Image (cartoon, rainbow, N blue to C red; front, side):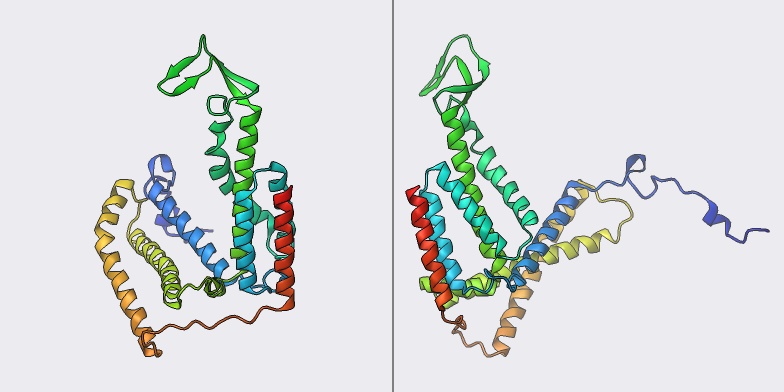
Length: 308
């Protein structure tokens, strides 16, 4: 039976016609950065808007969570014992169990941030060049010690027990601080969290500025992503970094004008809904006996951590 398929559909096109070298479709660094940033901001925005769930932690009054957060952050900052920091991590892990969150996903994010800012930055403190002490692992052996200005470099450079203790304390402090911050943000929506800060006598006008800035960050990032995708849809090949830099430089004025239009439209919408220059945020419900008991337990826990 004779085939009725047109001849041009049976012709195989070269693989590298619409792709990069050697037929590989590669994404530029700027393209990967824009895509990754947009995806992270989208997840953060959705999490912040839908943080209020039916878990025990989410049902607490936001004022209670803010007061407990500030108190525990101070406790974590003043505690210097590694045993106390580990005990705090255990308490936060139990709190995550009552938050209804996906602990595996959240703790992956916490560990990544803690590793970058709590371990890598503090890792040089484990060397005897920074922290003298008993050497556990020798790294470099010099012929003789050297002195550079006010710095003394011993003949044997290695990792000390005292240095490891310092690095471990710094890592656990960052880990606990990030864990506590994630617990607060992931269990409380941003509007409720913003209202809770009124307990520190922050003016409503300033809180509204924070709220509008928070909204505008996501609007601006969305505008950048849409502008980039609109430009990319008009091109066949992958966009090179040099081309992207030229495009970004040419779109700065456009983004500025777009931002100004968004601000004017937001202000016009506020005027149409009765804004008269005075901002009054609706307060949260009053604290219940359960909230007071949580604050009492948090105070006792913080005191116990400080004593350890």
